[in-house]
Amino acid sequence: MAKRRILKKAINEMSADLLLELLAAKQSQPNIPDADIENIALSIVKLQDDFICRLSHVDKHQVKRFFRQLQDDLSVGTNEIIDHIYHLL
Image (cartoon, rainbow, N blue to C red):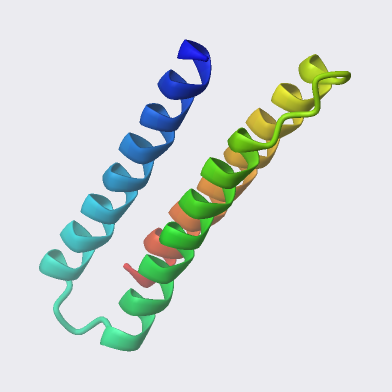
């Protein structure tokens, strides 16, 4: 169970880093619409909630495949959010 706790902590830290990056983008470019900032922040929170939920329901018969898929999906989701943030700039 310690591994899940570590992964949940890492996901929470990653989400916090993305939110800080979003706030830094807003501070550097004040003309960015607030609706865009809110939409991206909402997608970060949804991503975090989705992955925390997925970690709570691991299929014991396909553990390796589950964690590989989780890692791939997390990378894709994170990269999409980063792309959205940098397209605002």
